[in-house]
Image (cartoon, rainbow, N blue to C red; front, side, top):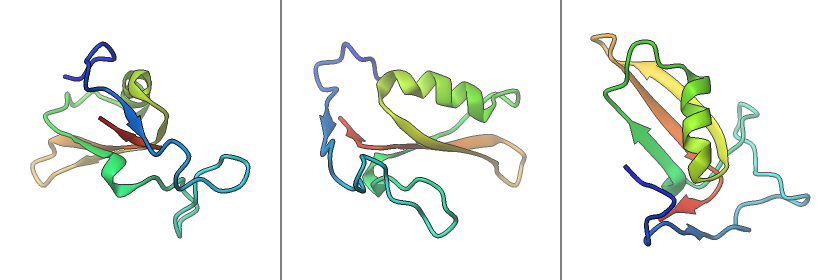
Length: 88
C-alpha cells in the first residue's frame, strides 16, 4: 500500500494534459480523461465495495478523475482508478 509519507510519493506533470481553465480533457463519452500512466488497477475487492468508497479512499493520494468498478466472469469485483496526474 502507498502512503503519503512514503519518500517515493510524488506527482509528475501536474499541468500536463489540462485544458484551459485547468480542466482535464474529455473522452469520446464525455468523461474526464487522465494520462494512461495515471490509471491504477485494483483487484481482490470485497463484493460490497462501491465506486464511492474507492473514490474516497484513493483521493488521499491525489485528484481522482473517475473510478470504474467492474466484475470478471466469476463475479469478482475489480476497479480502475484514474488520477489526474502520475503518482510516484
